[in-house]
Image 1: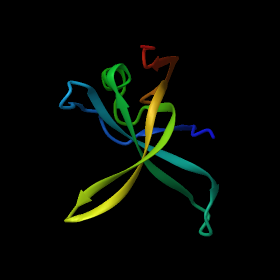
Image 2 (image 1 turned 60 degrees about the horizontal axis):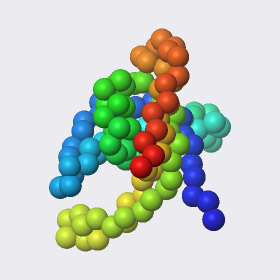
Image 3 (image 1 turned 135 degrees about the vertical axis):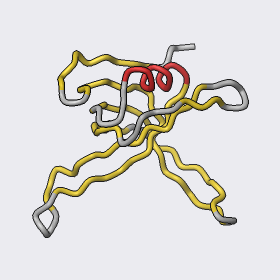
Length: 119
């Protein structure tokens, strides 16, 4: 079976890098993705999706992109359990395998692809 997703949306916030206990760079990327159809009131709804990026993808995306920029994300869906207010909850997120910078704050730029290095 294949677990793959491709999303295009605007960054909802500036990206900050955190380091894991093992020294891995980690960034959470918030995407706002407009739906391609109108709701019953005649408006386009927007979905908000969290993506997580590691190492080079995380650092390069944080360095070159900021809130409002349009990016494309290729990755996989992942679920994990987190404790929140004393309860365990499932969290769904996209693990980035590739991030493409599509547009920067209203001006088109040449797409740049960032992928994790093969080990």
